[in-house]
Length: 528
Image 1 (cartoon, helix red, strand yellow):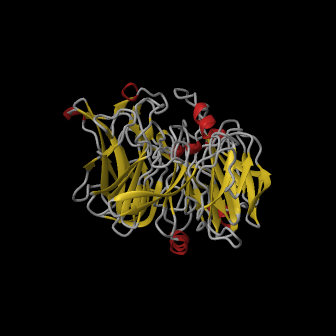
Image 2 (cartoon, one colour; image 1 turned 60 degrees about the vertical axis):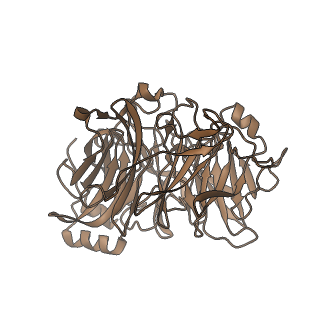
Image 3 (spheres, one colour; image 1 turned 90 degrees about the vertical axis):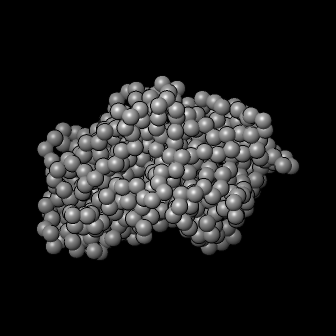
């Protein structure tokens, strides 16, 4: 496909960047995981259409992109000046930095964590015994960037001389080089009698434990989580905290130390954090006994955690009353990650939303999550029965929750008087999607973006992703999709749970061996 570029004058382009200062340093834009870019002044309902907007170009990478692309404008690259940079991490264990406004396929820099000639490779699909990430397993979770130190934290999986290894890496984002003390090998052991325990100890298994949820950076600590590959056991849910400066391991929590499973995967969405540095994660199917005295197993639960000295402490939790049924039917609560809402007026000012595979959208009070009550969810603020379950995470913008579920539909719920009210829905997409994104100039010019991909059982099937754009004030109105002019705009082959990134007039989509970039096609479109 012929490469298309912005034709904005340099003066206009610099002016836009100076006014915008958009940065995407973590999955879903912020630690609340709202999935909202509130600094988008280029893209709006008047110019996102098949005439003015489309696929600008693609960049070639060496593997599939499961991680959400990250973005840093006006980054000083040694010997190359300031560049607007998009970062892509691949399942081939590489990280790329591309000049968004460049005209060549070559990256500004590329870092790889494998060396096949010296016996260091990615994992194969067969190693992981799982077809959901195919044909190789390397970097899956979205990295996180510390803007102040210009450091990117990346979790990579490798096979080294036959041994399976996971490492946390710290890269200088200006050149891709490892920081001092990087990488550190992931390892952990906790006391417990759970699945795979030896002599009363449960140890982290770098083969069985699969990281899917995005990394989180909070107050100088990097948080990383794990679940399974296709439920191949024994496995547990793990969350670990590392000092962002030294990469020293600070704390470890196993979510089923006396049982099994309870993985933290969240369909690529990240753990969330509030202004008091409480961490929120959701677990999948697994054993649950936390309602009992000294119970420590948290299958199908939402956990509120806090780093206290050398320990990650469970300060509160919510577990649906029908947890046993969810576990038996593979209806993980943790198929979605939590989204923290801004402070509200009323009796429950601190709210969050989450929906799992069962089909319920929960509105919860973060100050009193509700724990577990046999027979009914007595302490939830609200539970809405949806048509289908959901993956990824919801998006929040301007008093609205946007939830994409397995019926291939995105719904708009307005937050009114502390409760959610259904306001609208999109038409059914041709294939399922996970986490939607909102771009807006504050409360103006809001667009809802969704990438539809493929079904859970289509692990080996190639299917082109479809980028959808809707008017966020009326999501029944589709502004654009990439199949309307498919000769020009068709996206590359999809991966599951794809989270698009919108920044400074661009939309970035990770695909199989490609990074797709969409935007306005000419100067006239900018003025519309």
